[in-house]
Length: 84
Image (tube, rainbow, N blue to C red):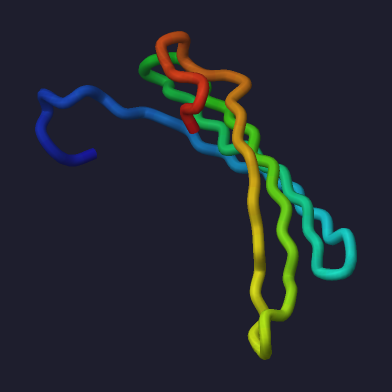
């Protein structure tokens, strides 16, 4: 769209479907995909993010504690396994 004409073309699509489920007592489980398709290189990068969180009280303050993991099921052949 703008910039030097001698740069490589960029043409990509990004979609992010997600699902979150409240499990009660301030606990939530979530899963999402951050799928990207590179139309120039013709490859997908499709990480799966799984996370959990808990809302609790520390003193008089409400806090959210969360953690998760990421794995990539589809990526360019030359990319490292942890690409996201």
